[in-house]
Amino acid sequence: MAPTAGRRVRLDDVAAAVGVSPASVSLVLRGAPGPSADTRARVLEAAQRLGYRPDRAASLLASRRSRLVGVLLDVGDPFDAQLAAQLQDAAEDRGYDVLLSTITRRRGQDRAVETLLDSRCEALVLVGPEAAPAELATLAATVPLVVLCRRVDVGGGPDVVRTADDAGTALAVEHLWGLGHTAIAYVDGGVGRIAEDRRNGYLRAMRARGLAPRVVPSDGRTGTERTGIEAAPILLAELPTAVVAFNDRTAVGLMDALARGGVDVPGDVSVVGYDDLPLARLAHIELTTVGQDIEALSAHALDAVVARLDRGAAPGPEVLLDPYLAIRRTTAAPRGASA
Image (cartoon, rainbow, N blue to C red; front, side, top):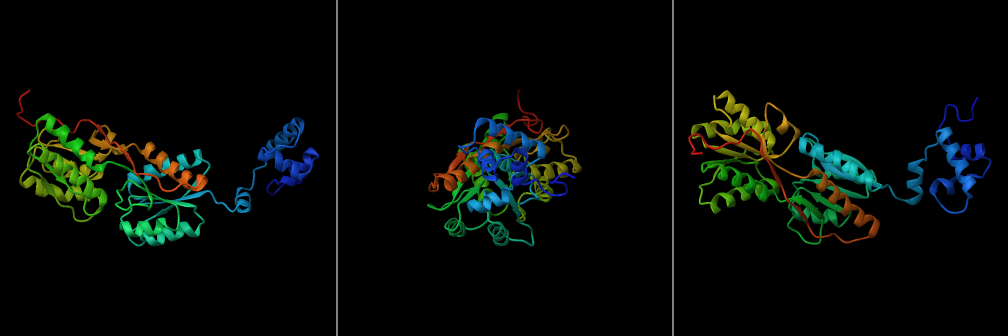
């Protein structure tokens, strides 16, 4: 029976197969100088043949590093889920791994963060946290912290990487105004910095064009389909020619309710979302929407982590990315507008 049957292949097994010391095998596998080219070739061949895999946990323990980045997000949010996948790829590209912790109705941010720190995460990335700036500054004083997709008005605290949310809703208004719309409503996203920035971008863009803003308030939910469904009766009472929604989920909920009310999109009313989720690209939806560069957001976030952990850098300046507009089927000139 092979000496490794039924157990993990160890460094000693590779050394025995080649006829060298375990120390020599360790040098080869770490790429360290010392062993001859012939020894290196034989060690690598034996390691592959035996199926040797380094014990990463033991290696990290010896170096007193976990190389884990904790990511806090809302796993029920499709945008956050996309970010999680990109953050994982970005971390692996930089020699790190990701540990996820999520917020639910029963599990707040403090508990989720505590779980990540208890798991020896070396840095944290918080996606759109609702915590006050002072709380984030306090956390940033204890662990390298990146706040992703949210404005933070505090200096010397976390690294911040985000899309200019106010510019995104302004893009939506500009697009609709260019089509000839003047009665443009906005379905709000409730409280929070992201909702505030998107609302303010809409308000400024409307006022800059001499248009009267109309904000349909949210019930406090952070942009679910229910938000759009519940906004529909208010809009139907005095139908605008166009609506900008806080996010894509809100827009889809609104369009569903409008369709049930006999309102055609975009014939009777144009609709613009925000986030450019995969559902926005489905053939039966084709939602015009403001998008965020998820790959760039993730790359900048992990670059900030690496700068803090590997180079001992201080928190850098805010990284502010431009949004983009994806024009699809749900926007058109208002009915009766001259060509």
